[in-house]
Length: 93
Image (cartoon, rainbow, N blue to C red; front, side, top):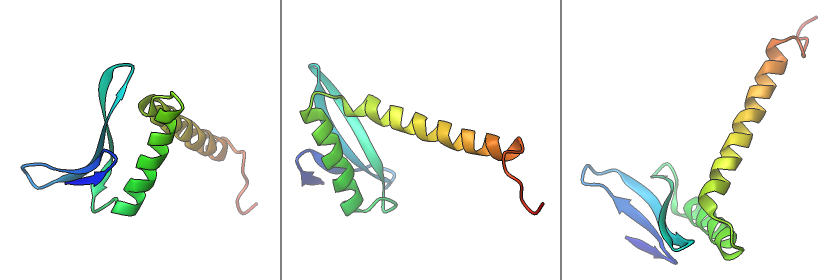
């Protein structure tokens, strides 16, 4: 089920649904997923798709960019919990 500009809802034989986008970068076919439907509705999927298309238009592959953002987020969370557990915070003292 296509939404336009390459975004589509892929329906698995088991009934699961994923927002996907097929694109080309450096002459290679790539596939990016934006989440499960209905967990991710159409509006957020379109927003993520639009951001990814902007990156692609500037010559940046959206897939590694997404991985870098997720890694940075994970490091930030780990650093936060490390500062809490090593006494960086004092609660109730």
